[in-house]
Length: 240
Image (tube, rainbow, N blue to C red):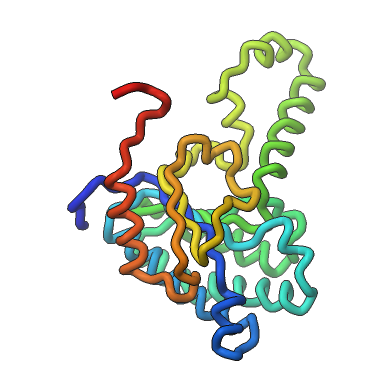
């Protein structure tokens, strides 16, 4: 395992640019998504080599449900296929696989494959790969608030606890409970926004934006992001 510089515990990637990559080559958008799977594999294996403990990927947002039905259907089929194909790699590399998001909107077959992949990799300890599907930051905060409100309504004795609740306490209601907030968030394709992603969790994340389209983002680009992160001085509002 290489540790030539400061390694973030949790790296998160907003994978953007699949459609533009395909358009530049005169191909269907699905071809860009398929090539993007190769980037997922490359970055996941590189993250393990570098000693990253958590790698998370923004694969499909709640807003993405508004895309054409054929594209959404193709994406879901691609995700099922990718999970089945990558399971041996996860196991051989000791990668625990986790999916977070509004899974009620996913179809039964995809949810079944997710559950199987999560079950088979539950004991893996080298790295955790978190894939966000049907996810949005606002949804995450809302579902946390709803869970808390319902618990308090069912148990009035919780009211004093709610009044004294800390940020850490509330974080326990987020979908990412138990997963450290991302140290570094990477966004590909030149877009300079976070697009409703990990709004609660990214409060002190370092941001890294690159013009590289996701299908072209491989080991070298991933390492460049880690090298840039190592130069950052994270003060968390303090004076050093």
